Image (tube, rainbow, N blue to C red; front, side, top):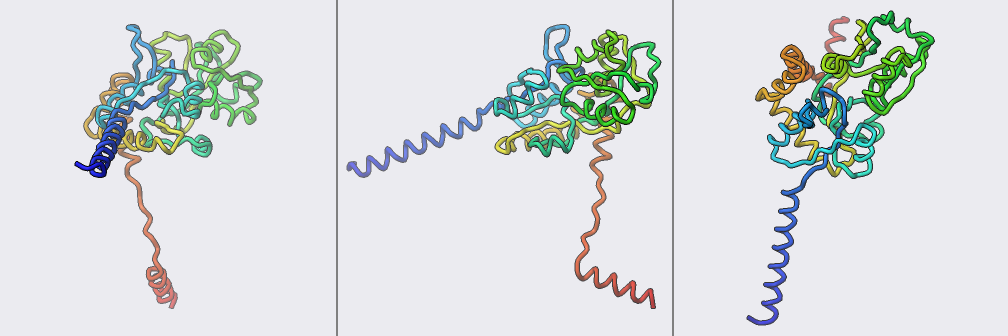
Length: 292
């Protein structure tokens, strides 16, 4: 073999090696997903010191369905958001409500995976039963959440102040200590926390929001592949019953059936017909004939 042929052969071999290495790297990519530390029943540590919850199980089921690997990092809400914004994590799953303000600031959401309302919560035996009863009092909220938005949207109208905390347990404690007359939390989280934590708190009727879906989120378009896999996997685990099993495990059968029904309802969308120029002319002629 002459030198020229040898050089070409070596170059081809090196190129093939690089391509194989690149392909292997892509296939072995481990996605880093940030989450909260305490947001029961969506993410929390159980009695066996295992990190569990609805978000944890949904992500695991979706990853198994789509065949990708990931590392789940329990960082807390603020730190988790900051990690994704800084590129230290690829995505966030932490009961993050899909809302326009977040989309405007660069959040890129998946399809919604759970519809939740936010509710005001008061101490057991409290005489607060309506928004009007909060006048002159303080309400505790968790930083950067839909619950905080809900409280802030009402504070001027009903004359209460708002104090912000970094996590849910500290927010609850502020109400239990009497420093705040109420706090605002996602309804399923609050119901589970009261039941499992035996907290001396209660949820008044009629003090909840209209509700909005939670979404898996990225903040860099280069991670669109992960978002697409999450959406595809979510649809598959809803279709095969895995999603319903996960919700039932943490919230009960009734809540699971309601969650699945919400997907069925939201999946049916009426499509408005597209008005073409010909259709517009035909409609105008029909109206003219009718007028005659």
